[in-house]
Length: 276
Image 1 (cartoon, rainbow, N blue to C red):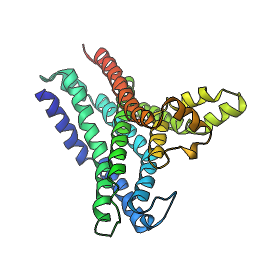
Image 2 (image 1 turned 180 degrees about the vertical axis):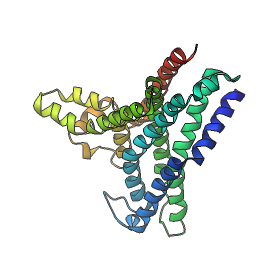
Image 3 (image 1 turned 90 degrees about the vertical axis):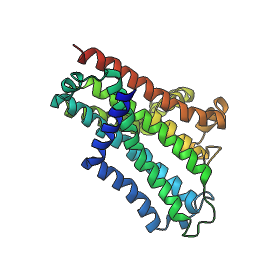
């Protein structure tokens, strides 16, 4: 356990000193600042105003930005260590392979989640002296939980890709391609299946709910649109099979479980290919 925490601490300290982390933190801090500067808290959408309106926009931006940052930074770091011969050096130390692997996973989770969470928390702290009528603590708690789930999921994907890749260029290409496919499956490909191949709607909805990005999107949407009006007829399939509370539980648990399973598969591959 001691080596696990030491590995996590080392990964955090190395990541904080890197240039990508500075850019990563600047992006999310800049998003919050931009939303305040352009007066988004004073606009109204579907009855949402103030900080609630800003959080709705912020969470939608996170859906597009967070996964690609997590994937690229993770696969570049781990695959780069393989190319630099860090694995061989670490295996020569009295640190178990599982402690090193899962310690890095825990440290990387802290690094990728903390800037996103702090930016969202700062928005509430800034909104209070600016005269916000109501602090949306419920939305803040739900969005934080959804971001934990999303970060965990894409960390698991990143660690699996890193275990399968022999160099950082190939790992980054795989990560970017996977992210692009998930984005396309939000709307473009699924609409094509419905129109071109006359695929039954339940099958298309099932494919959509296998995509963690889509699950995150619908979960975030359900917090301000409990009837999922924006989804159209597909909302009936989701609500009939899950219900509001059931789907929110699914939106939290499915990405977490998927991330853990994929990271576990990555560990098995890593252990098999890197131990003598």
